[in-house]
Image (cartoon, rainbow, N blue to C red):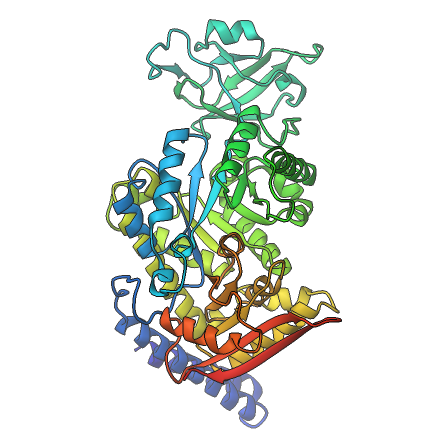
Length: 580
């Protein structure tokens, strides 16, 4: 029916052009146009038939043949998902990176979650040659609270559950002196924990309280004072406020530090647990990223780490107007980006968040750095076993945009259906990735690696090898790309940046290297399987191990690539072969 409708449109177009241009002058154009539209309708009809005939994914398993999803899942672990049986199910269903939210997590909770994650067994469990400690390649991401601005505690709020009611049209004074902190906030006077509040605001500025639940408009500012000037505001809408509610100042240029005192304590503690990534909240500039990296390096020295041991990678969270303005410089200094749509949707008009997401994902794709899309992706599954159609579309479009990973928050941290959430997200990813292969003309141009290919610097040997590898895999219809990586090699990330539509099975010498690669789209690390094996024997053993884990089957084509050190120089090798 869909095909017939398009054919009728094509015939109508041909008639219209014949009427305006004459039978002879447009005969070739009319025929070609109709034929093109019929071909498009045939493709669409075939694609829709495939969609209609596909069922849900089979129950995930850690054995047998599989075609793993390329887009990764970062899952926030909390009270409803931290116990070992649930965490095992999450790993089985697709969790690749565990997010620990240090805005809420206690030391005891972090200890439990990390210990339980180490006991979860993934695909490495199928290789009997691996050490027990290396069977599970799952990374840990420490998410900092960040240097937030907050309200103070409410007056007489001894239980922590009291609220005050603000009425639209009334005035309220924002106070920043410690006296008001001790006295407590009321309906007429609210303490804000930023002494220079009056210096960054002017009449007409907007202030958002509690994630935008209440909006204030600045009426007057006591700007003559150096510190603790009073800010008088008009209340735009009525609502209730709790103690310690968050404060957003859209467009205001604050001088908040890159790290709060709590952040520094948390990062140092996280490094004693060997976390793999640090998600830095409320990053405002490249200088902030450099400051965080310097502190991480300082902690490593104080903890007496081996200088050659990899430091945690810094994932900058973009969640303010200022960060958007400084995005290019932040991206240059960061190891990756998180599109943190929660606070971003408060800082900028909410209808612009999707546009900002697409711009940021494309920019990350262009330079080959991983990007996570986060916040409210399957939010309704915190209470319901199925997501809304809009949420499914959200995850799907993040995949089409070219995201390396998508993230769950409260759905898996405190929701009723954490396992069902991860399973559903994995199914959405699988469906989107298959559709992108079937209909590449309907997905984002950044999805297939073209942006990175056009942006890659000339003369980069590893990039050239990676590009040739992906081209060979595509032309040959390979089932997988196998990368033989050494310490310090960027080859796996570069292969990922060219966005092949097959798994990148990457053999690495250390667990740390594996965990810091797993965020990148398509990369599935295997640890230590080639230790002590000569370079010439590695391809055969790598194929055997990949087959044992179910990445490939007999008679599949694979592309194997690696870079090896000669006595005088490095040289790259690439081989296209069939699995015995």
